[in-house]
Image: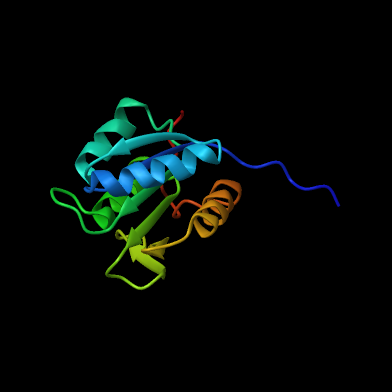
Length: 141
């Protein structure tokens, strides 16, 4: 069976630590993705709005100043429900969490994670994003 071509996209990395963003930027760029960066949820939300939702995946830390990753995921779920969000945290165990009033399920990666695991999960999220919550508006891109 032929191997599927890699799925690449525009990924917004949100983390308040520049070093973490740099590592993720390098790993994701090496996999062919275009990487955008934000230092907190408020900056990320502003960037997504400015791009009219033209982002394929948001990879966000949970614990950040101004607006944390869970709050960001809630805002994205309301305004841009077709953009998948993946959270990461050194403090929260990996798995899934619910965000917002619609009980949207968001995957959570436990830091640290290896580049192979990241590549696999990003490819999966780009191929099979979670469906938007019922009743959510779908903005045009």
